Length: 403
Image 1 (cartoon, rainbow, N blue to C red):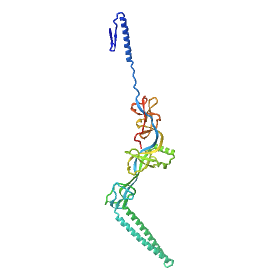
Image 2 (tube, rainbow, N blue to C red):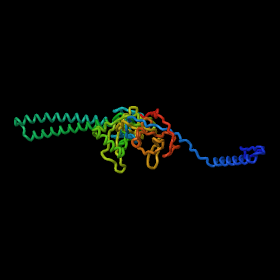
Image 3 (spheres, helix red, strand yellow):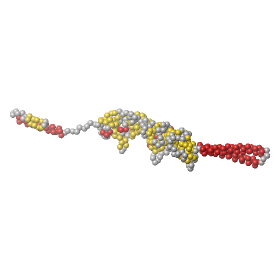
Image 4 (cartoon, rainbow, N blue to C red):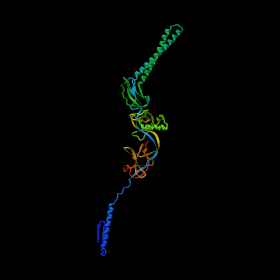
């Protein structure tokens, strides 16, 4: 006889009449016990946790780096002069093209020179007449002096001759001054470049009367090589630089020899190099910053006045700096942090103080040790306190190193 106990269990009973009853009872009890064990096994199934997530970790790169003071500044011309008409007259010619680069002494404008040339010749003629008068007065003075010595004339006659001679000499000096003034005014009829630079568009036209009531601006000339770079340094950086200067025994004059590097917003790195030129003696109390100026060579006139530029000044060198990728750094309300895997492969959060970017890696000033395993990928898959399966990677600087 066959007994169906479920889809996977079937019991067969012997047809032997001698022990059929007892055998059937034993088989039934065994089947019941097996069913109970199977049910108990189903009810005691437990949850098996998944393996720890894999995350990429790396040991910080350790090397010497130069620490920079970084700021944003703007360029300004080292020289900028408004060209004005210093004498009255009609503008005769414009002797340059707008925007030209000109050399010092080049003539830029000519103002009706004929009138001033005639005045100069008039002054020279008056000077020649004054010289003749002086010569005649000198001769008369000597003659009267001889006569007085022989008592041939009175002293009063000699006094009159002396006065005439002195007046003639004064007249000659006045004539010489007038000649010099006429020469200067005649020179003003040609407006020349006071230094090498680029001249702006002219502000007056040929034939226009200039210098009538007051000096008339004709154009502006700007020197572009070298060029100034103005920027501000916050108080914390000022204290750090001064402390480093004291440590190295540098004076304020030495600080002016510090190199300065700048780059435009569209340029990679800092291709333009110069030196610090000036630092304000006082901080601006309203902003808490110190005004600083650098001077940078600009032979190709790439830099124009008014550009916003990135500025950095090397302050000191850190021998054993720790560097990690920027992507490994997170931030929250309390500041910057990194995730570190400890010896038990448990994630920890570390507060760090970051420095400058160097060859594609970020300098960590404080909060990290040289042998820490920093999570560099998969930050969103891990949380502090979680156990992970760290996969050690090797850090390499960015292919485009900072210049």
